[in-house]
Image (cartoon, rainbow, N blue to C red; front, side, top):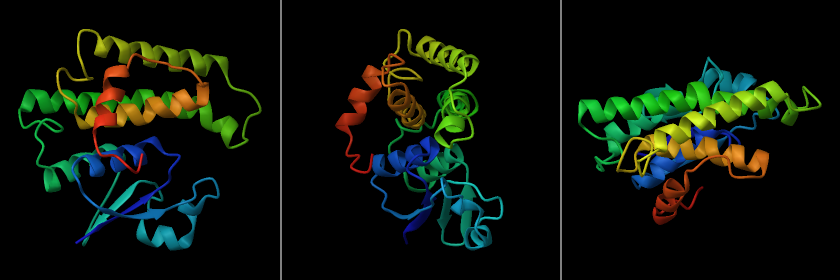
Length: 195
């Protein structure tokens, strides 16, 4: 059975889910949602997902939203690579912490800085939001100090989430914002044609 993924290419959490599926060799049935046109608010989509957010994964009768939760589910259900989502409680807790840092801090800072201008709700970028974004990248750089990846020696799904947020920010800012070179190089070695 193929899982359906309702997604928007502009969304870092959606791309992180896509990266996770690709990394474990899982084919998804992609269902694009145009969030710029507010398609997630349409009655057709709200019948599928009453909370009207993306990403949304449908696996048979099971539905799950929120990028990090979907990533963990895919790893538990279909993943066989323990390095991407370790079985050790301590190692997995660190992966979860980095996933929470991404969605609650880094991705949030990127979104608060970028989307008001991109969606034409504001005319100029807010300098205080930019300072907050820089602070989040400084935190990420601290996580990477002395490590090859965000949680240590191995690439995990936390790196996939973080790289989706980082690449969004780098496109917006048109410059490198963090020292994730090692992670980027590792990603280039994975078969990730949808990214």
